[in-house]
Amino acid sequence: MNSLWFALTLPLIAHRPSSMGSSLIVIRHVTVIDGTGTAPMRDITVVLHGSRIERIEPSRSDHTFEHAQVIDGRGKYLVPGFIDMHAHVNLSPERIDSTTHTFVATAPDPGVPRYSLESLLRFGITTIRDPGGPAAQAVAVRDSVARGLLAGPRMLVAGDIIDRSVAPGLVATVHSADDVRAEVRRQAALGVDYIKLYASLTPELVQVGIDEAHALGKKALGHLFVTSWTTAADMGIDGLLHAMPSSPDLLAPDKRADFKKAIRNTRFMFQWFDYVDFHGAEIDSMIASMVRHRVEHDATLVTFEAMAWGDDPRVIKSPDLLFAPPSLVANWQDGFTLAMGWHSADFDSARSVWPRVLAFEKLLYDRGVLVTVGTDANNAWVAPGASFHREMELLVDAGIPPLQVLKLATHNGAEALGLLDTVGTITVGKQADLVLLSADPVRDIRNTRHIEAVIEAGRIAWQPLERGGTR
Ligand SMILES: [Zn+2]
Image 1 (tube, rainbow, N blue to C red):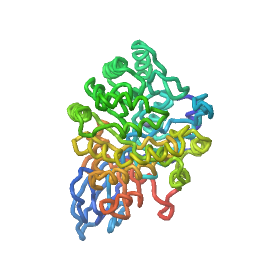
Image 2 (image 1 turned 30 degrees about the vertical axis):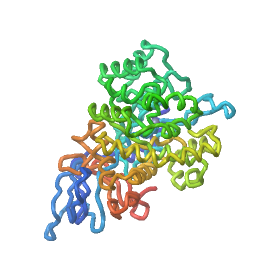
Image 3 (image 1 turned 90 degrees about the vertical axis):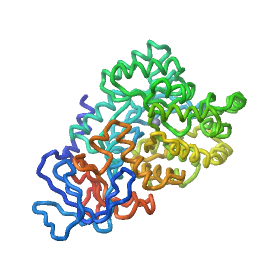
Image 4 (image 1 turned 60 degrees about the vertical axis):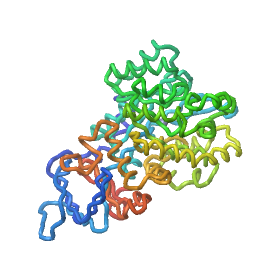
């Protein structure tokens, strides 16, 4: 860890999570929604001992607990800590040329991770994956959290995104198979958990990236375009991110030329939905490959909503922006957004395909793809933490029942990360990562925002101010 990071972490030492085995928290008469998708269990007593869940049993009135912090759970709901599969806590502001919409340089802001991690925790997210950021910084931040030097969710991280394009501070630019191998090795040596393969990589380069990652014991994620999801799934990719596959190869052959001709700026991701046939052979085999290879997928609908409504005060003046790092909000207000260069007609046409975007995500869910919940936080207008709750709302809008969305947000994330033995459900023996809610999230998914307490590894990590919290 270099001195910059050390200085950054100093004021937060008081947040150090306790792993001492002596603390005892008892939550009585609570409704437990355990994250497996089964019906809520009412009037339950949950005993947390040290960092673990020790007991889960029907509440008994004659039960007394000495030396325990007892929480009255009547009228309250206990869910597993949430898992945001797609939170870029290591992004920094980007300077852009406003006429050509090209990157000029990154303006590093080491305050972004700390601010983002606190916001995530405050909204009940106890595990995240950062699927792309400067590798050395991402690893340092991850390890600072693990050592208790920074407050925040447990992290898994990918390094710099690997692509043929040039974007200083965002992309590790590669031109050949040897370049890909060298970059994967560099990031693996720094200690990343994931390798992130990006849109302009050809199938040949994607294959090299996946194989090299696997050879080094790392998983490979794709945000792809030139290489289709079907090809990448068959090649062994572990995760395919964003509800917008966008590849011409996933369209019927007679539509591909028209789609390519129509492509203009980032709007092409939405335009693809004007051409795709959800019931055609291409999408059918894409989904079959994803299911066969158990490829995980997070939709990041909230980020696409922020693009399609990127001219709407509901998005660009949202109260949730209070929870986004101030330097990034300023950057978005200066015009660095995913809808750079869009005209009002572009916003209109993006909004017109929104029901099809939601229907696509529902189709993946219905066909049995391993769907998780990810936000793409710290992209324009997407505030870390708050955006996770909007993402769950949008998945309910897509037609997935709230109880199942809660499973995607907890159990499925843990499964995809390989952490299901430790977190993701309310189960005896697992780590006590829990969120206590004051309203029923099955009745209305927006009730996940009514947070009474966030418990991380058996310790109350956040409470609202009126309950003695700190923020
Ligand atoms: Zn992303």
